[in-house]
Length: 92
Image 1 (cartoon, rainbow, N blue to C red):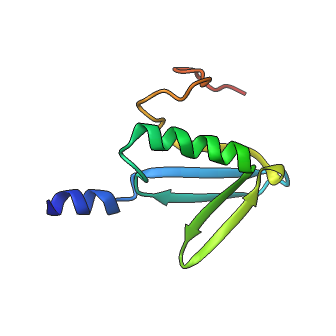
Image 2 (image 1 turned 45 degrees about the vertical axis):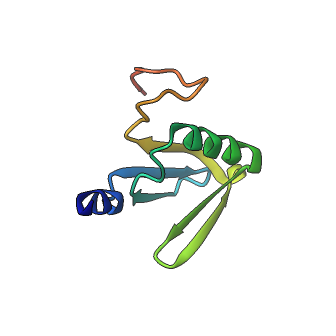
């Protein structure tokens, strides 16, 4: 049981937000849920609310989508999110 608690606290995920003004913010965080359905609901909520909320270092960052150019999340979810193109390669 102890190893599960330790794994839950491991910051094994990364998120980089690229803003319209050219700046960026990066965060690392533990997996938020093992429930695939819950993760899909979260993605739907983000799109509906048009804002990203991140608790970090004792504060909550509320970031409106209108200020965001691109969001990169890694690693990609094992379970597909509907509408996501899989196995693509980025190029300039």
